[in-house]
Amino acid sequence: MNILIIGSGGREHALAWKMAQSHHCDQLFIAPGNPGTASIGTNVAIQINDFVGLKNLVLEHAIDMIVVGPEDPLVNGIFDYFAKDEETKHVNVIGPSQEAAQLEGSKAFSKHFMQRHAIPTASYAEFTHVNYAEGVEYIKAHSLPIVLKADGLAAGKGVIIAFTHQEALASFEDMIQNKQFGEASSKVVIEQFLEGIEVSVFALTDGFNYQIIGHAKDYKRIGEGDTGLNTGGMGCVSPVPFMDQTFMKKVEERIVKPTIKGIQSENLTYKGFVFFGLMNCGGEPYVIEYNCRLGDPETEVILPRLQTDLVSLLAAADNGTLEDVNIEYHAAAFATVMAVSGGYPGAYEKGFIINGLAEASTIAGALVFQAGTGFKEDTIITNGGRVLTTTAQGATLQDAVDNAQKALAKIHFDGMYFRKDIGFEFKA
Ligand code: AMP
Ligand code: GLY
Image 1 (cartoon, protein in one colour):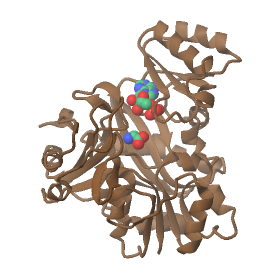
Image 2 (image 1 turned 45 degrees about the horizontal axis):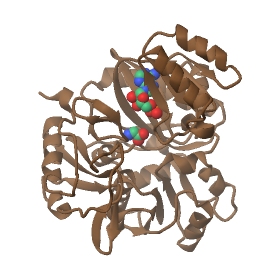
Image 3 (image 1 turned 45 degrees about the vertical axis):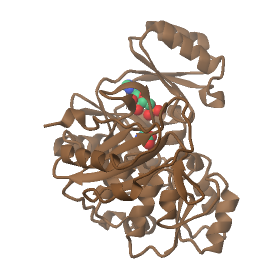
């Protein structure tokens, strides 16, 4: 089977690494990819939202399966674009329809959905310029902290956790009156702050059946001890010690099953990954958000941990046999540690030479997944905030983290920074 992966981050490098291992994978293309994916398959310089360009590529290379990495093309309707075209409707596009992708693309849509299906989530209200004054009163009367969310996609920046009413009111005004995130913040969801530990659970669904394919804990803050600014993710561990059978059963019964049933009963077309962003509040799971794709860097631990052939799994989601697939995990623990450019998540420079990539892979079977990298002739250079991540395994989470860090210690670029405390709360 010929396969196309859309995207260019560490998630897509991990997808390429995993899919290339399948004997069902013939030719592998990545659009646009990065130097890491170029070492596994063929990078094609087509942008993720250039549906016409992607269609031409699919026809030219008789591509059978498309895995969409990032949310943008999904929210923009890539699934429908291929499904509705006579020439491409046979292609197995892994991702929800545009309508179903609103589970990620609109916070209000997902909150309504959870409410309709009695899925545990933070209590909320939504406001636009029409009921702005009501929103001001709502904020003033709300307990602290209080969470404000731009309804639409805002490149991961649309969530504000305010610790004073003043701060909340200022953000509310910025979002609605000053259009801080453009159209994305013309509607704002205001919700209760959930106290707990955040975790991510991943399922694959065909809209009727599902399989849970992994879970992880992501470390989102830039600083050690979970301090400082939010980032795209600084590292992950999997499995997570408290996500035992009891907790996972609650997740499955209260959240995963009602979500898939809801998708089915509302006739949403959804063949793809569901990322449940959860809060573990004293042993009880709540949904913080849905994403309609895999996480980054969660993918960089869940795919190495997953033993099951991913291409077969994605084919099963297309041909109605998802229920029959056996999901198997490696026994080891996995960790990934992200190396970022100096200054990230603020301003940073690009273009620094990266040394030591080959040496890093010699450490305890570590994997290097590239994210914000680029080529300068044949040399690999930094080209983004999150530059690369090393994934390693170990008998315990701590061993896995140690191995990932040992591998990372072989790599160097000017300004390189990484957190040395990934998995800190699970230290023996
Ligand atoms: P999101 O863009 O929905 O992933 O939100 C960004 C981050 O804000 C989440 O990963 C959480 O860390 C935090 N967050 C969002 N909603 C809540 C909430 N209701 N309570 C506590 N933290 C939240
Ligand atoms: N690591 C969080 C995300 O992919 O959204």
